[in-house]
Image 1: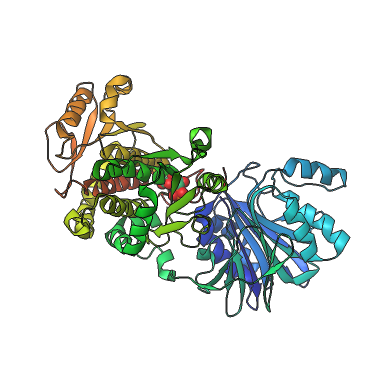
Image 2: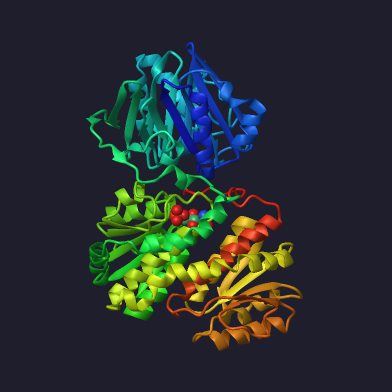
Length: 589
Ligand code: AGP
């Protein structure tokens, strides 16, 4: 939930680190900081707020030196304060670290260190890393040995980088259950939570595996396992272009990524059909198929349940990842796990995957980030190919996940892709995006409301959940998604004069029953925002979708809900790319 970046090379580190921080802000943006070493002196600047605000105040780029580390924070332990911002330093302030993750045993370590005479300046768990390294560096006079010792003492999920005032020629990175990647540039080396941090400088990367340590100097990289063995790792040429990570002509990444769906749904279709076959063959005979995911990806899992059942008569059980180990049964033998995750780094998902693999289950992933932990820890992965998704709210990744799920359901049902209409999806998406101005007008009528309801039946229920989540996380408006038929069992009591209800009501087998639910709500004062391919006078506002193949309709149905949430957010003068309290990749449990 934080972003770290380090650099060592011939260039001035500060500018490189600042640009890298901006690329990592989607991972957390409540505070940030940077430190460099110049003439054997560590210099630190850190502050509260977004990177640009801190830079304007502190002028981060006047930190000199060609080695440094930097961090953008999403607070886990300790409030959002300057003292809790990273980098953190040792007592003598001659060792600095930046950390992403959580140190589960930090209290006991902190007690030992305080007894040893160490003085702490922050409330964070991360600071113990700096003091522990100091303790063992004093003992061994060897940076590598000190960090190796510390790495083996820490419990939890962590990725950290460390620099040493006494030796400005090495940058050390450590990875356990949180992502850390090395960039191999022409004029220097990078360490970062995500390749996005250094993609402007190099597309050559080494992805550290769990329990590995990188000792990076200006001459190269040495990689050790936690038990001190040196390992050779291949260099990966990363496919992403720099343009993928710029906003281009758009004001926000979120809008850019909503619009990109014209292309990304087509890119998702670009699958190796042998891998689709292989994926289906490996799941179809399983005794039980669990889908494990969070948030938007969980809504894709619910859509998979609908489609696999309806088309292929295969029952699957989507379970929210953080709930799974409380009632999913991994020991019943013959089960398989389908893990759906855009980032491939969601701790709740990885936690289940690791437990499942310990029990000998097979894990199959549907994922965007090809270099993620989930890919490395799955038996087979299908890639949604939607490119980097920077906006914290999942948009293009959701429709791309749905495309893969449709391909799998069609394959399992022995149905042809050509007849499904999937190949025309891009055209349908383009048509729906033409509704942008109308949707923006609707957003201006409702942006001050405090509660929204999204209702739908059958395949439209997961889309109702997704529409509600978009509004909550972007506009900070309470919204509830629910089955249309469920309203009368309690929630109808909350429908009041002017309560906006988004009714997903295409002219399919759910049409008339859902229309009846809309009438029930309208009779109690609700404002009905109808999303359908057929007008009805019950609707106070109407988003007119094209009539498309019924099977595919849910994929295009979510797009107006994404636009509605985006424009309500804009009307509320909030930043859709950096919603408060959230981060793009939830790497803590
Ligand atoms: C969705 O808009 C949110 N950003 C969040 O719910 C997200 O879907 C969830 O954290 C899962 O992320 P993942 O797909 O990367 O695992």
